[in-house]
Length: 376
Image (cartoon, rainbow, N blue to C red; front, top):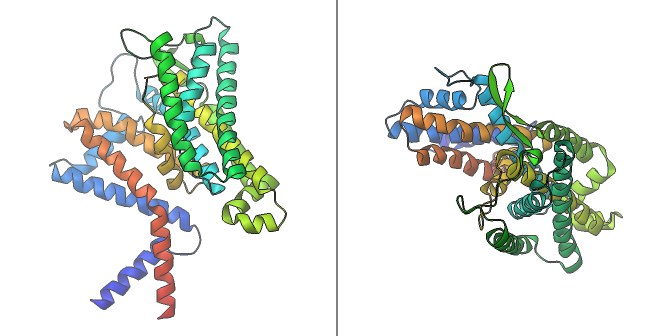
């Protein structure tokens, strides 16, 4: 029994222990466990897991479906996947940047609502030229998020206020204030949401004709890719990136070394907030067209697990966002094809996010096992 236990430890250390690409191996291990748990769940329901996962890939546009409705194809499904992935990329990057600095930003959802609301009111109901309107939407979203993020960072540095408490309070304040204005001035009596924004301000082109197909084209998806690579360069190749990571590792040592800790914290949260603002406008004026009162988007909270799954790196957050949204978009098709309840399909996504969130635990456990095996 003892030998088996030791062999199990050695295997776990080999999979998740110290060494090259440890964080990547842990992420892959988390994905494997989530797929395994999903397999067990599907088997318990009497469904074929291979067929289920194939259906998910088909629903996300990565594999062809058996048949398509008019003016739809595998390409249109894939373009839809990119459209819904775009705000998730920004949300995950927002969380990842803050975590690199040792700050837990859970105000992403609140910032998304505020930036989406301001962009909607200031531009979404106007008759501005479409190009100008879309540019202003992005600028307003970025600026709004940056200001809120900077406010959180300033309170943390200047008054040593816990950013989690501040973020929770801001989420409530933003949610209720925005809901008040929507319900009193901008409510749609039929949908009970805010009045839909005009097409000139939308960051997604719906039913856009390309040949004999009608596609969803996410206009800010190229911007998301640009931000990913720019952020990677900023964090890994610039002085600010080094200071950001240094403060996140040890703020006292960084201060002793001459780094302006307060300035770095505020600038980090400014950047994190700006990314959350981009997530907000790409969500509420992109894949959606209106805001539901008193509801914070779950995407902002899911971004925490996605950022952890992506090892808090820019490239990792991109691929983790894509993976999660493949499941999110594909489970609808799986549910209809295999007659699986939508809630069961959504549970598979929740399992993936759960294992992603406890990746840090896997890392600490593997490191402890590695140390124990060295001492034996």
